[in-house]
Amino acid sequence: MAKTDMAVASAATLVAAQCVEAAESMGAEREHLASVVSSAVNVRSHDDITTLTAAAATALRGAATLKARALKEVWNITTVTPIERGIGIGLCGKGNNNNSNSSTSDSGESVNGENFLGACSQELLAKGTELLKRTRKGDLHLKIVSVYIHRTGQVMLKMKSKHVAGTITKKKKTWAGRHLFDDGEQRKYFGMKTESRGIVEFECRNQREYDIWTQGVSRLLSFVAKTQNR
Image: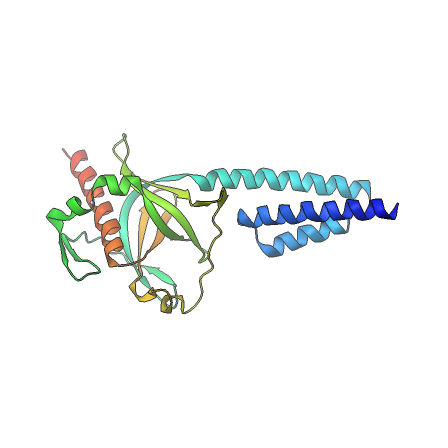
């Protein structure tokens, strides 16, 4: 009987380990997982098993809903806003909607406004690139971000989670002094104000990437505004 119990316990441990790994890949917090595992270990009766199973089913349904929501987010953009970096990666919004016609790239060359769309076309923004999205809690999520003009005539922001080996990429915690590593001084930040979610903040790797997004989105908004005023 003891051997059977040991075999069952070993199998249960293996299953639990796989479940924990899957949950972490979906963004579950380690503290929450530890609490759940502790509850499972302390099961003593059929009622405990029933309660734990019901809680697990509810959690799985919630995770599926959040995953589906995270995989594809589409919002209507109203403005694009430069953002200054504070301590570490602390950000503060700057109410500056000045859509300049020229800028300086990371190589020091001037990017003329008239030729900007030649280097950064609508197709580039619509195709999307990887950007780090900053959450309200200060975490960084790797997203595939794209901006395009919808058939309704609105400029839309679309975000999809980056996938690695079939799982959602884990979020990255921010920390004070992060800008000192991995060319952190070159990083630039901007926000896109949406009607439903407020300002969505992003991190760019350098000045050129920042120019592509801020000027590109501003030009799309300007184009739509002129079209609507005709």
